[in-house]
Image (tube, rainbow, N blue to C red):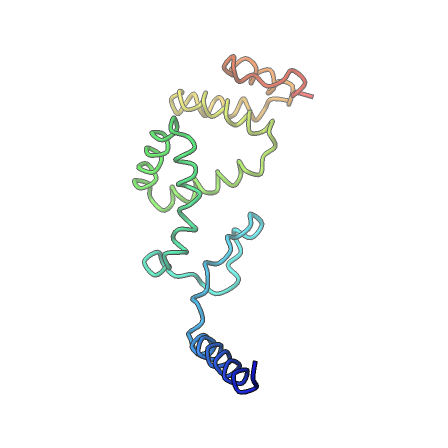
Length: 169
């Protein structure tokens, strides 16, 4: 290959490379991706810049927030009615009721598996009682020893939901 051909090819290659590199160098940077979801330890931490209201979130940020719900919905067709009714109930709650519900959910998340089972059985029983009987049961529950509570749970849990016999220890 003669030197002139080599020079033309080299110039042409450099021109082509420069032609693709220049627009990329001057192009606007891509929009930042959605922020990483907060960890459970950081859920109450408001450090960092405030996030916008829903209407001002980017489509990527909205998708990030919606994706877990979509996955739960698709993975559990038998739970869809319960999930939908839960959403309707949430919409009808006052801000104070929503705050109490959030605090209760956080308290439940921090419980041991045994405490969760106790709370579930106790809740199922309490929801069937009128307010005066609820208060009486709550007072009795607070006075019970751990062994008495375990016996009460076994007596009041459904047959499919009995805790293991050694759970009272």
